[in-house]
Amino acid sequence: VIREAASEMGNQVYLVGGFVRDLLMNMPNNDLDIVVEGNGIELGRILSKKLTCDKLVLHASFGTASLIFCNGTHLDIASTRREDYDFPGALPVVEESTLREDLLRRDFTINAMALCLNEDSFGDIIDYYGGFRDLQQKEIRFLHNLSFIDDPTRMLRAIKFAVRYEFKLAKVTADAMPIALKEDVFAKISAERFTEELILIYKEAKFQRMGRELIRNGIFKAWFKADYAWNFEEAESVGEQRSLTERWLISLKNLDSNEISAVLDRLTLPKSLKRITLEYLRLKQALKLEDLTDLKNLDELLAGVPLLLFNILGSDDAYTDPLKKYRLLREGIQMKTTGKDLRQSGVREGPEIGSILKQIRLAWLEGKIRTPDEEKRYLEI
Ligand code: ATP
Image (cartoon, rainbow, N blue to C red):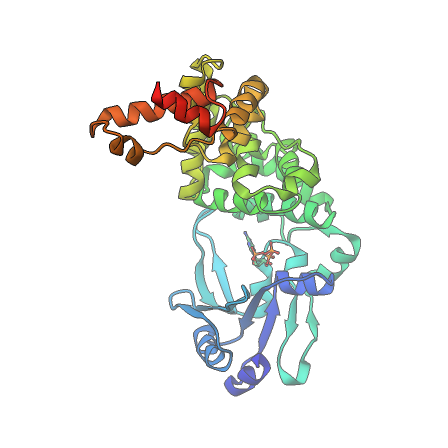
C-alpha cells in the first residue's frame, strides 16, 4: 500500500530506524517509521485513506504524520529533513533536506539504515554509516563524536540497546560517555526528556541489567547529583513479571525518604506513578514511627492500601514479619455486619455506627472473633 501511495505521489519513500534494524535481526517490531523525500503530511493523508487506521495525527510545523492502528501498530511519517540544535538538548529546528542527512541525525549506526519502498528499488537497504556491519559485529556506535553532547539522552539509549541485544558499546562510543558526563551535559536536558528515556528502560525486560549499567556508567549520579543505592538486584525472571510500578518502587527500596523525595523532584513521572510513589513514601515514613505490633494503628494505616504497595512495603526487611502477620490476620476477616444491620437493630445514625464497625473489625484482627457466629454473639454482648 505504501509502495502504491509513493508512486502516486512520485516521491521516494523509505522505512527507517528501529523497524529496519529489527527486521535485519529477525525480531518483531510494531513501530514503522517512514521517511518520504517530499511531503509527509500528504503521504499521511493518502495512507490513512488506503489503510483504515484508527487515528491520524498531523504535525504541520514538523511536517510529520502518525497513523495509529487498533492492533497497536504505529506508523510515523516524516519528511527528509535536517535538524539543527541551537544548544544541547533543545528542540530541533526542521528544514527540508536529504535522506543521507536524515539518517545522519539519528542516534546509532544500527538505527540509521533505510529500506526502499518504491517499486523500482523495493527492499533495497541503504546503509551509509555501517549499520549492517555493526549489527554483525554486535556493536552500538554513534554517528559522530559530539553525539552525546548534542543529545545526552542517547547515553541511556546506548545502554538500552546494548543490553537488549547483548551488544557492546563500540570503543569510541563508550569512551565518549565519561567525557560527556564530565562536561555536565545533562544540565541542559529537560526532566521530561530524561524521564521519558528512563521510563522506556523500566519497560524493558532486562531493565535491571540496564539499571546496573546506568549506575556503573555514572549516569544516575550525573543526573541526580548523588550516588543513591538504587536496587536492581532481583532475579531476572522475577523482575520481568513485574509491572512498571512495581519495578519502579522496588528500585527505590534502599533509598531513604529524603532521597526518594529528591528523586521525585528531579523527574516528571506520569501522574499515577508519581501518586503511588508519594503514597509509598508516606507509608514508609508512617510505618517507621508506628508500633508494628499495634494492630489497631496498623489497620488504620493500611486498611485502604492497594495490595501492590503492601507487597512492596513488605519486601523491606524491617516490615516483612509484622506486615505478613497483619496481612494474614486481615485476610482471615469474614466480617458480615454492615452499617445497615446496625441501623436496623436500633443504633442511632451517626459516628457510633462507624466506631462499632471498627471495633468489630479489630476484634477479628485480634482473634477475639474467628467465625461469623462468633461475630453475632460478640454483637449481642
Ligand atoms: P525501540 O525498539 O526501542 O522502539 P526504536 O529505534 O524504534 O527502538 P524509537 O525511540 O522509537 O526507537 O526511535 C525511532 C528512531 O528514531 C530510532 O531508530 C532512531 O533512528 C531515531 N531516534 C530516536 N531517538 C533518538 C535520539 N535521541 N537521537 C537520535 N535519533 C533518535
